[in-house]
Length: 464
Image (tube, rainbow, N blue to C red; front, side, top):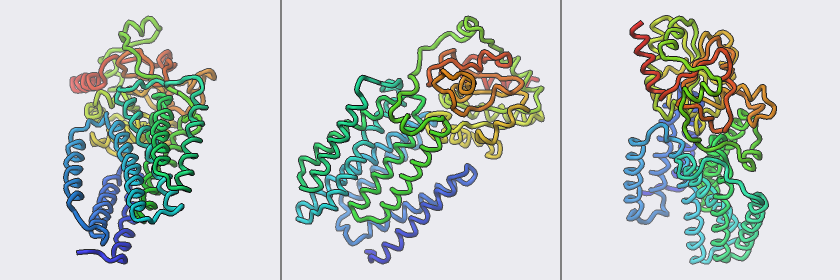
């Protein structure tokens, strides 16, 4: 069975509409599951329709590849820890970039064999290849930083921007030469430079900027797919790539705004550090004049509170504390305490990281609020419970003009009557600076693994 061109175009139109509808539903946690369903349905239709395209003459390699890819995808999806989701996203972006490069090279060789090369076609190949190559190696470096295989601290050196500029110009030069003359070696040289440029563009990015980098690479992967769509003359791939590209770009802008940083400063900057060595919690706190508290004291104050706002961060993700935190919320609500969650746009290591973790623990969507919605409520909160969200709660962003995060919008946890901060040690967050919140009279630190602290607090609430 083969589809006619008109039937194929209609199925692609339906798939594109489902992708758009899926994106619309993904805009809110309560409808996100439906959004995934629409997007998956659209992709299944697109794959089936493509397999029935008249140009597909054999399934000898296609079917085994689909089966192997499906098995790998299912196994990875079932085994991946939610705390490692940013790494997985970065790795998937690299696959898209690599696919764009391979398609560009393969399509060029096919057209060269048929003698149907044109300047427009070779320009499409050039654009798809260089965006894909930068996406591929850039995403691998992002994966390495998130996984701890590459230092998360900025890797800066003298003349790095000039080197990147010269490489960029050289890449464009070889690309234009290829587009005009169709010289295959120039295409390979251009791809090699783009692969190197992907590494050099991401290696200076510090850990604090990783959420923006993840969304930016997402945008790159979309543009690589769109360019590949032009090369293959596949309208649905163009639509899908453009959707991903624009969504990633818009999200990058939103995240930069949430950090009070420009997109250019993220690319050219080197903000953030790697993970510092652990310090002993209570001893370091005492030395720095920071108060520490016991789980028993925290449970007593929580139990006598009327309103509690919980601020999750990467510490919750690392400890996989979301389920224990959900049980803590249930115990507090049973005692008549009003509980809400406050989510900063760049909390965690990727956009929406905290929302995904809370959804996994079945935390009701109506308890989860964004920064702009929840900030006015901290004044009326009896307790703000911070679970490993360091930089996004640091008052230095408002008070210290010399601070690297000055001007960054933060969650106003310092305005709550009591602040309990669950933290493993006194080491700083990814920005590499002390949190001024720790030195306030209304703040006490609860040292330990976030999951264990939450479980102990639940036990105290049960015994009360």
